[in-house]
Length: 301
Image (cartoon, rainbow, N blue to C red; front, side, top):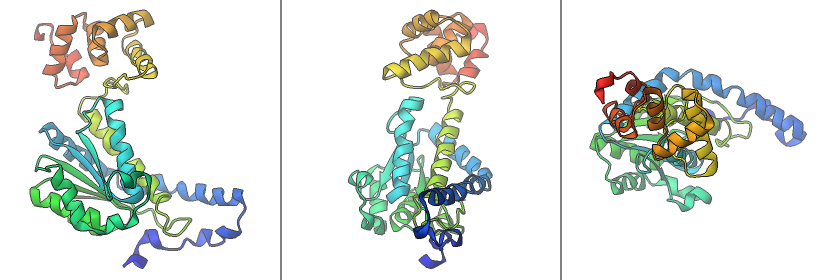
């Protein structure tokens, strides 16, 4: 029942919210937000298990789907949209499935979340297979659209992960892996775009970043697989090369051009003094992991 959910409880600390000054309102919100990282910290081991499971599926050619409604769904859209520019991930690798479709990203269609068959159909239209992984997003943990999606994904053998903000959730009991971040009552009762939304964004950051690191998209803590599609990102690419190799701006610029804009390839060329072709071949042999490519023997290329 809705009234039993932790996210739907009244918060005693903010019961005079309507009589508070602006400073008092945001102070209450700030104090509440400070509890979110601690709630996420409590489920870090489960998040790590989810990352490794997703990586296993993606390495076999699978895809990752974020499925949600309302705020939760929009957070999935945001995280999925950031993967191509940040990690040069193909657009189809991480996809968002929003209850109500694209229109609902910009305008609330609250009744779209009440149809479990629509959740199943949305994944069926994307030809979900056992190689794929889905993350069902629901602050309450009981959204019918997400339940339908998880049940369908289970039926085809896909990996299912539930991310919600209530313990012992309906979606959690259905999924292979349940990430239940208990964020408690909101400052504004039931407004799960607040603490619950913040917690889901934090976990999504961890999932996508952790997965992409494990997929070879990062070297040290550098964004070496970014897609340089504008001036800022082109300049960032050169700076990354400079930081990784210690070369001058001019050398980074020239090598990046020779490497056809591929940062990892440029770094390998400079560090191992090899041609663009050899660097590309070694990266392919290392499954895209720059650190492994740098450790290869000289005759490996």
